[in-house]
Length: 79
Image (tube, rainbow, N blue to C red; front, side, top):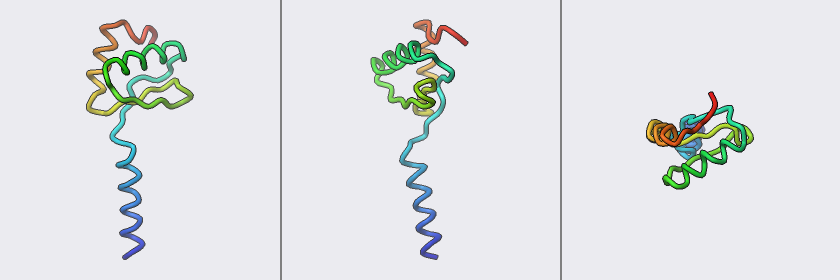
């Protein structure tokens, strides 16, 4: 029972610690990813980079807002 409770708590902590992130964009070149993260910083939207900087993740609740804001500014330019 102790092992099961400990394992369950471990899973909850690991999943909860990363937040509920969703993919914003992937397959970006580094220059465009840099432009996007600058805009996210300006808008106070937290993000994480993965895939060597070619994939950007944001809070799941902010994905649509971030995409609309970036789209209004012409980003991303490809894809």
